[in-house]
Amino acid sequence: FPYTTLFRSPNEVKRYVVDYSLDLDTGETITTVVPTVFPPAGATTPVLVCNGVAIAPAGNSFIFYISGGQDGFQYAVQFLVTTTLSKVLEAVVAFPIGAKV
Image 1 (tube, rainbow, N blue to C red):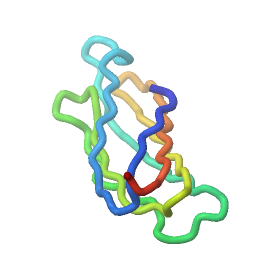
Image 2 (spheres, rainbow, N blue to C red; image 1 turned 90 degrees about the horizontal axis):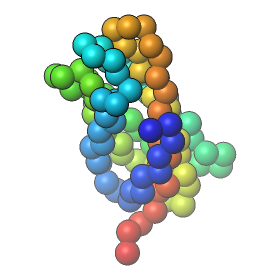
Image 3 (cartoon, rainbow, N blue to C red; image 1 turned 30 degrees about the vertical axis):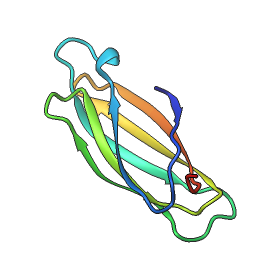
Image 4 (tube, helix red, strand yellow; image 1 turned 180 degrees about the vertical axis):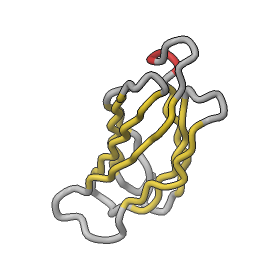
């Protein structure tokens, strides 16, 4: 899951899940998730917002919510994940923003 593209409308607030089950060793869990939004050049408002990041109770995945973004632009969100075994995992998700037809 190093890079994934997920399409959404600028009016939606959507929940997403990133699952690291296959990347974690037995007994290893996620301890922190730090998201960073990378806006595209030329995008103004509304900004893309990533919030509500929460690690699932099993510790092998996390959820987050995406809202906003300017129609016609593609944003990227980087997630830096640390684990109980001090691994650092990175996922980058692309969010092209456009009205659905």
